Length: 134
Image (cartoon, rainbow, N blue to C red; front, side):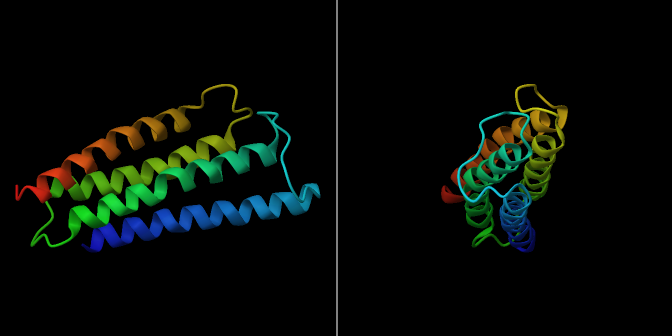
């Protein structure tokens, strides 16, 4: 359960730090609402990185906590999936912010997205298996 709680906390931290970074960028650019939909615009990249994290982090955290609930010992493959999917969310956010434009794929963004999809499905399987007593 400790791994699930730690990873859930890290996912929450990612969402709140990215939200703060959006606010700071809005202040620097004097943009109180809306965003220029230019994929190379820093504020646009920040808003999308935050939005994307906010879309995936809650479900991943929920899956992690459910997978760990009531288990005497969480299988190692489930714990490693939790750790890897959390790292992938951070890689994805870094890839979105560090790229010159969101119009082109960035390796960290691609790895982060792929890891999120695969890890999310694996966590779903872990929840299904746990609900069936296996």
